[in-house]
Image (cartoon, rainbow, N blue to C red; front, side, top):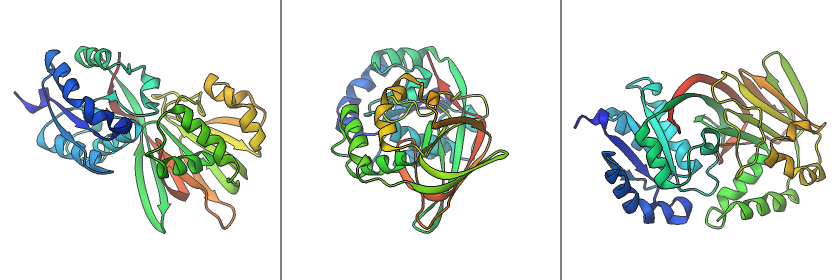
Length: 310
């Protein structure tokens, strides 16, 4: 069989607290029983998913499945975007969710149920979504990353950094929500400057969110106005918001109405730059992974990722 007709499956065995590895043999059998020919490889370390994606495309595969959570998704998307063999939009891509938050699949309504998502893969319907690029600073060096979902700065990144450091303990959305409130007692806002399109806003931002898709943090909607294929970032700025504002308005984050709060401002932007306005930098996370700090620049590639959807 031509490799272009075969799926290459990238499995994170540690996803969902080792659920990915434990369930993979049964998932592989389900794929085979559904007539979905595939090869696979297990990731061995952080960042390995990106390498496996690049290598699979170089070998001739044009269809990729990631078995894992939002972090695995981010790695594989980065591999697809960084390869130079074919246009990224020529690669069919889907996720079999095994993570804790599984936020990216919510936007595309990809089922969590493995049997149902295999049916989706077999049908083969696709859509194209935009992909974000972020250039940032990490330990004094310049970094660059693609992202398919949501980037967060300030408090959002502070929580994600704490979550990444306690990766073995964050077992579900309830614990993540507990972590959100625990971090409130230690977090201090930083002055920052946000420059987007023809506007500039300087202030003390509790959170800054940049979205291609809607959901993050286990179903929260910091960017409920995001549209994955409209060629624009959804930008949410929480300027001068207090800790009590966050606590009292948490339900809005799940309902998608956070933009109704008078201290929350939502925008659309083609490009965004965030700079520190004081000595201390503002932190950055993308797709639930802490990566670095300001200065940060965001740009967008339109309709760059071909996603298999219901």
